[in-house]
Image (tube, one colour):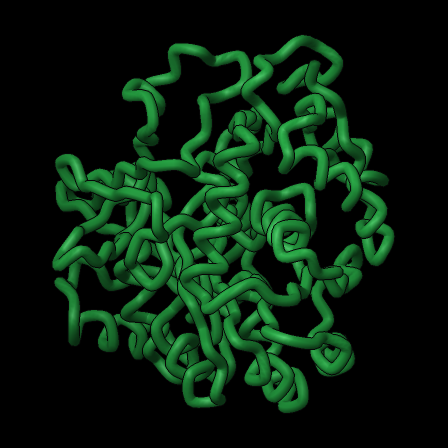
Length: 381
């Protein structure tokens, strides 16, 4: 039977740890994490994933994807997959330690922080992020931790932390800061490294029990290949499939998950270039948003950015960019900057200055919401 597991916010999250012990040991009914207090999201998950109904005994955890469609899919993870993920993470990072939870625990990244704590036999330190991430909480949290210290963040959180000198120093005291959930701009990683932060870029998803590729290299027990430009992940941490979707093509080969990401494997190191379904066709040519974003991120005035395609009568779609700027910047400057390293086709034709980029799930850019937002805005000069 699939049981609903309500996840409270703040330090009350610790109340579910005894249940997670049972989940990891495989002696609990399968659980579906839902956010306590968020009735809208809970109702959405209940409708799509049907807690209170039978499920295979192999399943320990059903975790909802934060996918681009309105209907979430439920990745069915076994207890052995969860244990393999946690143990492989500790092996890669240098051994078990104390974990700081700074992400919502009903998503896979936050849930894995709790599960790794259970495996390590340590008590997690928990930040209350119900009202948003406050980097000012990091120094005291870090000071309360002993032994090896780890945490997991998304890029927007790291950007905020690097603006706070004390928070930056706190992160520099960690043995590893896992960064995932969204593509991390190169300049952001460089800034963190210059501040002494041991950053580990992770790649994975709900369907692989969270990150299974660290700094481009698979964890022990994980596998990766690239089929016709598409990233395919395999190994011990891969989900059993989607709840209620026994024939889903992403799991057509047992033990492997076909992602929607484009990538290149070179010398055993994976580079992910973006989602295949987010490519922009403009004037008959293809532009990958994440490649343009990586180029734009090296401009000193660009704090955050996102590239999307908007309908265009002549081109089919035109490339536009939304920028959270740290200083004044013009479209002409950004076009020149992009054209220095990429084909001019990739240079944005419109610039929208925004206060923040819309996100979904644990810090992932919501491109659909962004396109809707830009449709109501006038481009900046």
